[in-house]
Amino acid sequence: MGKERSIGAKASKASVKKPQTILAPRGKLAVLLPGLGAVATTTMAGVFLARRGIAAPIGSLTQLATIRLGKRTEGRAPRIKDFLPLAGLDQLTFAAWDLFPEDAHASARNAGVLDAPHLDAVRDELEQIRPRKAVFYPEYVRRLQGGHVKTGADKAEMVEQIRADIRDILREREAARAVAVWCGSTEIFVSPSEVHQSVAAFEAGLQRSDPGITSSQIYAWAFIKEGVPFANGAPNLTVDFPAAEELARRHAVPIAGKDFKTGQTLMKTVIAPALKARMLGISGWFSTNILGNRDGEVLDDPGSFRAKEVSKLGALERILSPLAHPELYGKLFHKVRIEYYPPRGDAKEGWDNIDIFGWLGYPMQIKIDFLCRDSILAAPIVLDLALLLDLAARAGLRGTQEWLSFYFKSPMTAESVYPEHDLFIQSMKLKNTMRWLMGEELITHLGHEYYD
Image (cartoon, rainbow, N blue to C red; front, side, top):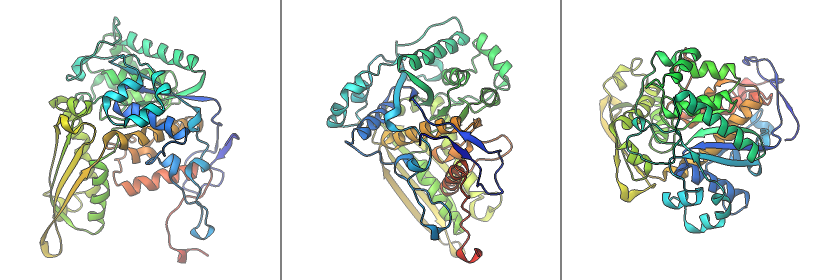
C-alpha cells in the first residue's frame, strides 16, 4: 500500500482517461465534519472502536467488502481495503464544526445512538474533539438555534474563516491532507439562481452576502478553495451547481453528493429495479417515516422537508422510466411523508405501502416496515466517502465523482446526463471504477460461453 500505483495500464478499451499515478496515502488524513451531531459522533466512535478491535465497521464497503477481479475461474476476490491504496483507519484524525460547544463524547451521549459501554471505551478520544464555531444563518435551518457561531461582515469573510480553520486543523493534527463530509442539517429548499452559475458570480455573491448562498455552500466553497475533497450528505444545494463544479475542476478537487442513501430510499432503489426488471406495474407507492432525532426536528419545518421530499421523490421516476412504460408506471401515485416523533429518537421507522399489478392487470401489494437506526446506517457511508474521495484526489480525479452515486439519494452527475438510481447499476459502476483505477479489466458479466 505504501507504493505508488499506475492506473489504467490494463484497463479495457472503454477507458476514457490517460494512465496516471495514484499517490501513496502517506501521513495522517484529517476528516472534517461540519455538524457534530448523531451521524458525525457515531462515525468517529465507530472508527475508534474498530481500530482498537472492540467492534466491527459493519456496513463499510471499504473495510469489509470484496471485489472480483478478472474471470470467475481466476478466483481473485480481495477485500477492497487490500486492493485499493486507501488510508488506514489508524491514519484518520477528526475535526468538526457545530452550533453547540460540547465535545464529541457529550454530543454522542446527547444523541443517544450508542450505548454507554461503547462510548466509555473511547471516551478519551471523543473528549479531545471539540467543535469549532459554526457558520450558521438561521434562515436556512429554522428549527435549530445555537450560540457557538462565527460572526463576520459578509459571507466572503465566513469563507475565509473556515479556510483558516482548515489550515489550523492540519497544522494542529500534523495531517498531510484533509477530506470533508457534510454531516449537518437539511437546509430549506433552494433553487439555483444567477449567483450559482459561475465562479465569478458566486464570489461576487459572497461579497454582498447574497441570500441564495446558504451556510453549507460557504463551507463547501472554503473546502474546495483549500483543495479539500468534499461530499454532501444532505439534500442541500451545497455543491450541486455550475459554479461549484467549475471551482472544483479549477482546483483539481473531487466532489460528490447528495443526501446519504440510508433507510427508506435504499429499499426503494432495491425494490423498484426488481419490479421493473420483471415488468410488473405499480399504481401507487406511499412512504412515511417517523424519527425523533435532530434531523427529524429540522425536517418538521416545511422548507427543510421540501428539500428532503425532492430528494426522496426523484429515485422512482428515474428507475421506472414512466414515459417508456406508460402502461406500467404512467399513472403511478407517489407520496412521501416524514413525521417528527421525539420518542423514537435515532431509531427511525420507514413504512412503505406499494400497490402493484401483474398478469392481465390483477392487483397485488407489497408492504415494508424498516425499523432502522439512521446514524448506524449513515456512519459507514461517511467513512467510505472520506476514504474514497481521498483516493480520488490522490489519483488526480476532479469535479463530480459520479461513481460514488451508490451512496446518495440524489446522485450528482454531469449536466448532460441523468443520474442512475438503481442500486445494482450503481454498485457495478462503483466497483468498475475501482478496477479501472488499479488497471484491472472491467467486469461485463458476460457468460462463460463468450470467452475463448
